Amino acid sequence: GEQHASKARAFNAKAPNGSPDKTAIAREIAAHGAVLVRNEDNLLPLSAEKTKKVLVWISAVNEQTTQESYSPFLAELKARGAATKAMVNGNCLDLRKMEEQGLRFDAVIFLFNPRDTNTIRPVGRGSECLWTIGNTKFHKPIVVAFNSPYLLMENPLMRALVNMNAEPLEDVQKTSVKLLYGELPFTGVSPVR
Image 1 (cartoon, rainbow, N blue to C red):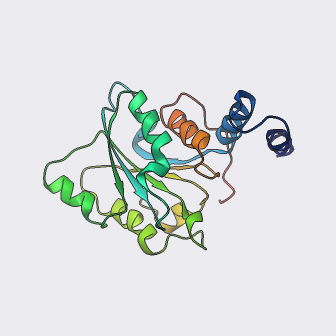
Image 2: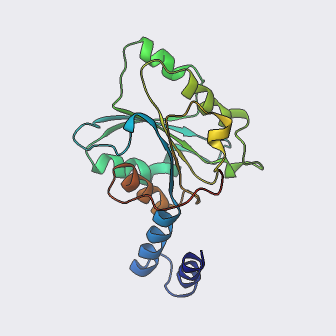
C-alpha cells in the first residue's frame, strides 16, 4: 500500500547505494512483499538443526543467470549450517535420477525468476523446474519465486511456494532465506487469488 510506496521513495531518495539505511529499507520492503502462497505438510519453516543438506535448483532462463547470481542466497543457507549443492537448469528428470541413485536432501529449493524472459510464464528452460517438481519420488520441493505470482496456476503440484514479489537482488535473496527459516514473518498478500 501507500506505506510501502513511501518507504520505496525514501529508499531511492535518501541513502547512497550500499549504505546501512538503504540496506535496512530494502530488507523491510522485501519482507513485507513476500507471500507464503502454499505450505503443505508444514515444509516451512526450515530448521537449522534438521536442514543440513540442501539442493538449490536455479532456474536460469537466459545465459546471464548463473550460480553466482544467487550467491547471497547460498551464503545465507551455509551461514545456517547447510551444505548446499547448487544446480543451474538441468533436465526435468535429474532430481528423480538422483533419488534413484540414493541421494537424499533435507530440503530441495527451486529458485525461479521469469523476469529474465519477456513473459511471466515459465517457458523453455525455465519450465524444466516445474516439470521436475512433478517428477520427484521422495523430495518435497520448496519453490521461491521472484516476480511471478502465477506459478501455482502453472503447477498445482507445488507443496510449498513463496512469492517474493521482487527482483532477486542481494538483500531480497538474504531476506528470502530468513523467511524460509521463520526468522521473519510472511506479511505480504498475494495479488493472485
